[in-house]
Length: 68
Image (cartoon, rainbow, N blue to C red):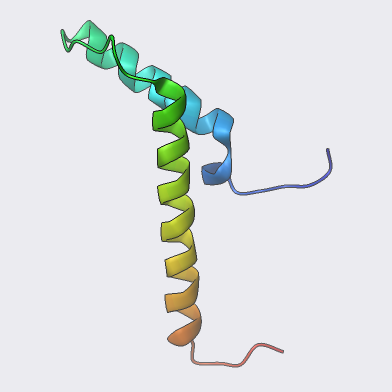
């Protein structure tokens, strides 16, 4: 495993964040019995990936210098 990727593309990180958020919400009294944590993590990862792509395109369009 020599390849690297940004932290926000890690499914493990997103699953952990969803677990922490669900636990915190449950401790505060919010009912979360029917939430599918895997589906929430996957949805967040897809949203972050889409946003990342849009930022990359926007950055390239507004760049002031050429890529060599």
